[in-house]
Length: 147
Image (cartoon, rainbow, N blue to C red; front, side, top):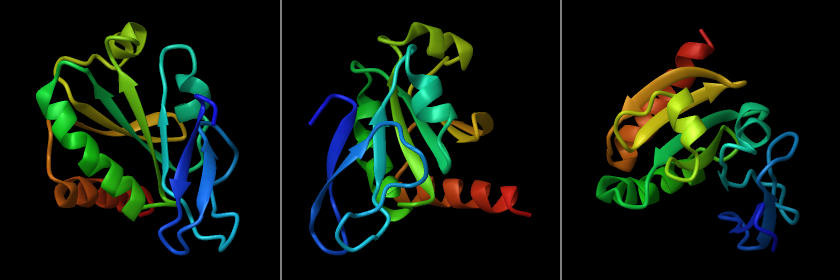
């Protein structure tokens, strides 16, 4: 496995799949063709390729290693990415390693969550929240885009 891909176990059939950080379309299980959760790390140099060119909506987690709430919300975000597989890609950005992105998105508190549609910020939220609240925020924002 390279640094730009993750191994993901399919929730439907249990097979392991390698999911690249950047690709066309939506990742699917090589065995059963179910949508797979898409979680990637990005930084200043590869954010455009990984997040802005992605086809599904992109949930960006702007976080820091020293931030307690960031560590608490990370599993909830990964749960949302699993539950909304095929609809949302989760991209995690460590702001200490990516100061240009932190400045670009005017991060004043971490975690800061963004929802992107083809690279455009369509929603923003600061602070940690439980998975059900995060999922509701994502789903309502996506639904509003389709009206």
